[in-house]
Image (cartoon, rainbow, N blue to C red; front, side, top):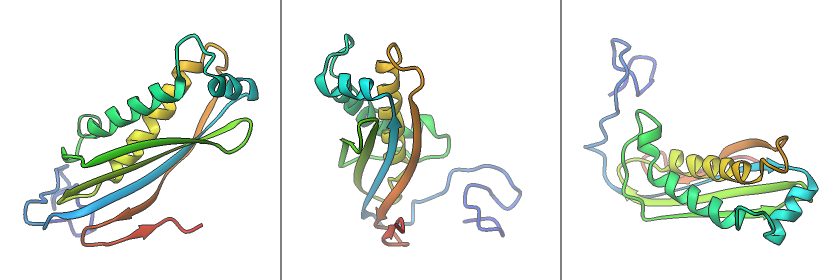
Length: 161
């Protein structure tokens, strides 16, 4: 269970622990996350035109985000290893210098997929930076956030706009 302060990743003595979800029922769970990559307009143009020498930036970033979601438990110490039903990573230019990265992750399980969605966005954004840093070292990754989660005991949560 949890300590008296309600922090589930610590036992009553304050020791870190992985939460026991064994008694929880499996439910369909989803999470949507997003983040932004800010860049020079010329960098955005190069991404759109697929003219960078390293290849199609968005396709490689999409694969990196999907792979990262599948490996979240290896990156975040107390996350459960989950069997994911689906992971998608999408991109949308919001302006001539801002690219939004979003992910949607789903599973049927005993714990949520919020961390998997956030990791997918983060690694996709980092991959964009890595592939474009030779032309734009000033790129910024910002506003990585959970937008929505469904399933489980707490039900649906959506970020207020």
